[in-house]
Amino acid sequence: MAVAAENSQLQRAVALLLCCLVVLSGDQSFSQALPPAKSELVGKVTATHSVTSRNGKVIIVNDVLYADDTLRTDASGRMSFELQDGSILNMGSDTELSIVTHDANTGETLVNLNSGKLRTRVNKLQNSGKFAIRTPHGTVHAWGTDFFLDVSDNSTELIVYSGVVVVSSANGSSGLGSKLLLDVNARQDVLLDDSGVSYLRLTPESVEQQTIAETIAPQTVPQAIVERQPITKSSHMLRNAAIGGLAAGAALGAVFGLRGSKSQSTSSSTPPTIPAH
Amino acid sequence: MIAQASTIWQRIIGAWTHYALATSATLLLLASVATAQKYNITDIGTLGGKSSFAFSINGLGDVAGSSDTSDGKAHAFLWTQSSGMKDLGTLGGASSKAFGINGSGQIVGWSQTTDNATHAFLWTKTTGMRDLGALNGGSSYATAINDRGEVVGYSVDSSSGTTRAFLWTEPLGMQDLGSLGGSASRALAINIFGNVVGWSNGKDGSARAFVWSSDNGIRTLQGLDTSDDSQAVGINASGQIAGWRSRSSETRESFVWIDDTSVRDVGSPSTSFDTRGAAINAFGQIVGTAFGVDSGMNAFLWTKSRGNVFLKELIPADSGWTPNVASAINNMGQIAGYGMIDGQTHAFLLTPVGPWPK
Image 1 (cartoon, each protein chain N blue to C red):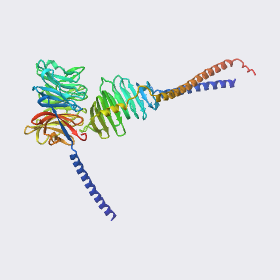
Image 2: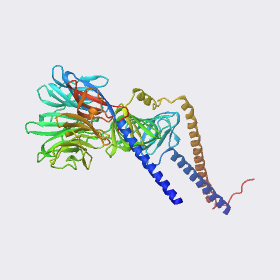
Image 3: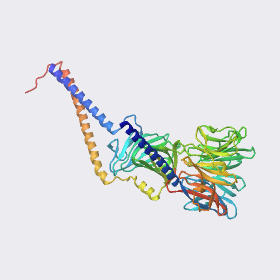
């Protein structure tokens, strides 16, 4: 009787442990796929090419983006995504950025462009100048504008394709001592560096075309990605299947454990039967 | 002995350091003189008449102003490097003048209408010249437009005898910006953030520079004496303001730049008795006009590092030009104005040669 009771408790404990493990492992896998609950949905991926990632995990078309996400492309990677307010951002290769905040209602947006190339087409906003992209060399404030940024270790190049942006330089001054705010028009090209503004010039047409080409992400997924995605997808499927199997097993174990314990507790009031030999 | 030798060496090293520093400073000074920014000057031409006047320049180097036509009328023009001078026409009357141009190529100014009134206009490539109306049905004059298409100027109500600075926007139309207590105010410039500067009469009738913002309304600039006449004529994105004042204690006017808390006289060319700033760019470069004792006018450029320099000293000596008035400067350092060439007054464009000027 005592042994049977101990077995029953042991089964129950194992079942509960398995359940806990499944719940924990499920949580863990979920936390990898989704950001913390506090993050806001800010947009979705519309195109990718080669290896693109979000917070170190591969990201694909139609994946949603959240505030605090860090996006990366590899040496031949491209990625386009659309923010909730309709603004479109095209990342070039070897590019890293993080979406700090985006509020489609107020237009308030801040993106940190840490390195690489980014074309931004800002949807026209009622609340002007609240769309900002920050680089190590300055911050660009935009109104319904189309512009390109190229961030390297030493400098940030800004090319405005249409509309107007205001650049707040991290270094240098207006020439009269205060912080420099520079309004930059379409067809202008600015280089920001440690000294402030290194140059401001009319953009040569060839440069404009070249920089646009550097951030185009194909809308159709190329073969190389198609070949890679099933691996990713199947690995996800395998993982999910394994998790599902474990969960099912645990659930069954729990059920059977409970059932076993229940039947044993029931039989505890009746004489035990001797197994047939 | 060792201590003595050490002292001698210290003296030798000190002397050499002193010499090296002095030499470096001299070389730097010579280098800065040798690399003083020079400019090419471009004759913008006319619309067929004798004279033309440039009043505004956008970030791309496109110029707006007015020119005599072949039949002797003054017409607003747009000049671009690729297309040359274009007649913008009128609102149906005889003459027009353009005073502001933005990065999108939108141009504002004023024109006579078919019923012989004078109205502010907004010109675009696609819509042509559009009448912006006037406050209380009077006359109106547009003086500037920013890169967001916001227009400022002033409107005159002949029945009441008042003049009011206005801000015109597409959704709201023409808004009265008020005054500093007097009967007149004029808005002369607007920056990308919609901050407006100009001048207004106070209750005592004296003209005072003002700044207007949607948050704070119209207010006087701090640091200006109430006994001084003053005007604010330009404002950049950082909120720095160019203007001029006529101090009651002095006989001459001087131009100033103003930040949010202080006003600074920046001096006048020694041969001038009056100087008036006209415009300021993002880098704090200011252009204006100096009025000499012989009543001659000379356009100048002021920078913090070099002070006042007449434009005639920055262009090729054999150009034949005397730049009289500098009206505007953009962020690439290009300057628009007008001056004498071959005995006639023509609009000009100055473009920096070589390294970009900061």
